[in-house]
Length: 163
Image (tube, rainbow, N blue to C red):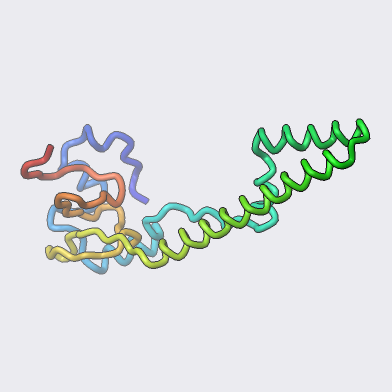
């Protein structure tokens, strides 16, 4: 990777482009491909998928559930079996419902993320080209328009009506 540009926003544009071995016309397709293989995809590390057992156990960490568990234990020590069973049943049903809802939500989010691909417009070989955000590499010149998301740390080289 090029030398870190910890305060690139304070440097002149020419110096930033020089350190990134880039130019205002953008990278060539070949340079971009080489950098992609060298630095990897421009994406956040995927959070590891939750183990169903861990997801289930996490349902019993909330303070109210812990208080109810303590009440069930106390009720058991006092010999009130019916109250103990009722409290434990409520805790178990609550945990299972929470697990079911969270598992469904996690699966739904995973399916949505698989469908959506965010793209960025970059200059490659002097031409505007739309590519997946994961393919943006250090030194790419990104072209932004109103409503675009920024695919990473960027320095504004030129702007029109920027506010």
